[in-house]
Image 1: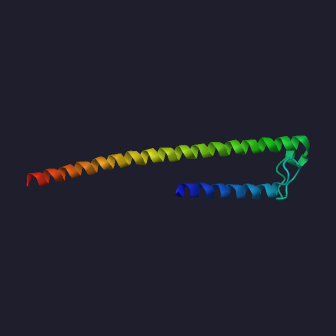
Image 2: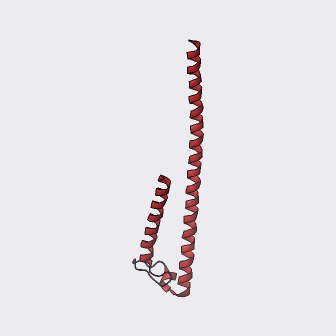
Length: 108
């Protein structure tokens, strides 16, 4: 349940950041955006090259975000695997101690 809530909150956060960024950019490839920054000479020039440059830039950042999300998923999967192994190790220790207690009570 908490995993679903966390995922929903993350999506909401990313979506709001994208909306804020796109509000400042204006229309991609149409010259300088509303945010005050030019975004580079290609974007400032506008036209077809500006649109193409903006599209390439957006594609690059989407790819980077995809790679980061995949790395994060891999990291969490490794953490889960580590904790499962740790649980198994500790369960064996518990069973070993219970065996010692049984042996002690049997010896009485």
